[in-house]
Image (cartoon, rainbow, N blue to C red; front, side, top):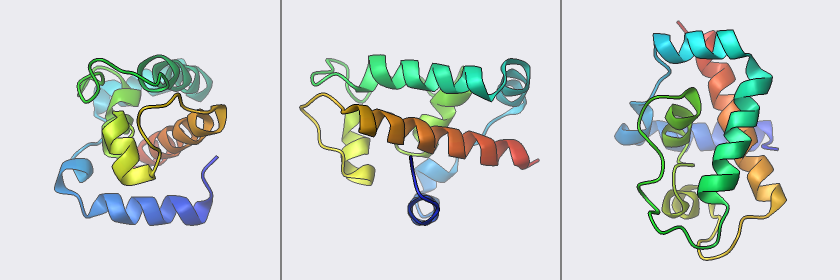
Amino acid sequence: MISDEDWFSLKERLSRSPFRSRFHLGEKERKYVEKKGYDVIESHAYDFITKRLAPAIIPNDGKQTPMKGHPVFIAQHATALCCRGCMEKWHHIGKGRELTEGEIEYAVSVLMRYIREEMKTS
């Protein structure tokens, strides 16, 4: 779980990146979150992180997260949880080893915090 202090620090750092700060939930993604609810979206986030980022070796690292099509994908790019290289650079979670359950939970908490905040904006 990400603390408030760590969240605000991460958000501030990400806001200085033109690439990261361009990602926002669109109308389609917002409607999807409203339809499915946060619990389902969180289960999708957990599934995506576990299958696409948690393994030690990812053959297509850097290309495994689509740029659109699901609110979690948008959140992954906005929060630099889209590939292991970005996770290492922005979150100091090293490559070349399997993610721990704590690291998976951290990633999911960051993604959900981002999505919840995006849903409050118009």
